[in-house]
Length: 164
Image (cartoon, one colour):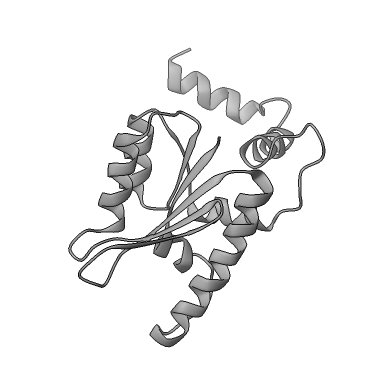
């Protein structure tokens, strides 16, 4: 089964909305509902990790979605890194815009996506049959934008760069 581990507050902060401590729980709730639908639709286990504020950590399970608040004194980053260390599957995606987490995932041989990239996947329409979701579609879009040939200026720059 596919699995996604998400840096919770990192993703919340990338929603592009201003929030106060009073509205933060509302934003979290809406995000969790969206992730719950995503996880069920794609039959993907999603683990959402938030920095905890209490003495004890807590967790909640909603079908394919696990919501974890770390214990006091433990950051979501450290908790995610411990999950990466325990991972026995390369069918795991780490979602965070925190470079240290993404680098840790890469060094561990795992895939990662920025929070912004993952949010775009959540809001994009369902791919057509046979088309992969997320990264493959993005790669195709990038390939379509590449110029077919190099300009004379670009060729000259490459020649200078490589001493030709």
